[in-house]
Amino acid sequence: MNYILQLSGFFQKVALDNRLNPTHVSLYMAVFQFWNAERFQNPVSISRQELMRISKISAKATYHKCIKDLHNFGYIQYLPSYNPFKGSLVYLFDFQSSARLVVAPDRTNIETSIEQALVPYINKENLLNTNIENESTQSKNDIVLKVSKNRVKVVEVNGEKVAEKTKGNKSKSGMLIAPPDIAAVQNYFLEQKSSEIEADKFYNYFQSNGWKVGGKAPMQDWQAAARNWVLNAPAFAKTQKVLTTEQPTPGQLNTASSKNYAEPL
Figure 1 (cartoon, helix red, strand yellow):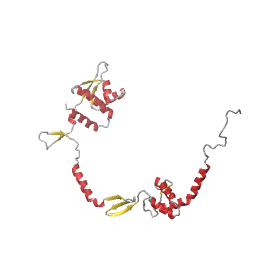
Figure 2: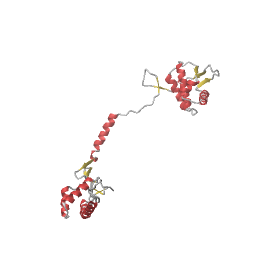
Figure 3: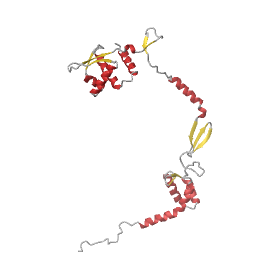
Figure 4: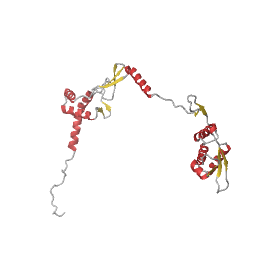
């Protein structure tokens, strides 16, 4: 008995039989395991408990239905035993002849061989070389990205440089600009008849939040923001002065600081 040919013939028969379900196949494999343990001698004595355990069938009704179906469909010959002390007998049919054999003309020593599915072979080395050649032919269309000091991204496509917008500060024309240095801010504040102290406050404030207006939108024109800062500086200073004068001084209560606790109330 050829183990492989027997199972190959069985599964070829199962593939053409629409009456079977996975439970039938599982039960047949469990019976086949008993037959293999008996050296493929017919008949083989079976145990319902063991077959249900191996085939993972939990219901007795399902077991009896499937084993009777295998008998009626011609896969086994089932001889039930109504004696609880004697196991039932099963004859298994030989399916080796149904296994399809294919002649191998290129081999002289082996006349027959079981047909196998061919797996296509992929030559990875040639595929890698082809990809490298394709990349070399497309080198003219490569895109080169460069970032300059003023945070403007320059894209080179087919040898032509094209400016591209990136995240950062923008001017009114839409071009990206770098944040101003503190010297430029101080000079501009002096031109607006303000002080270097206000320029330092302006620069430190917006430098700390990434030059964003309201902490969200990128600043479009820092000079316009500086002019607003100069206009609002007096009102802001007045508000700060009022807040500082209205704050109570600690320890100054409207009570006598020296008391004689020996005097009766």
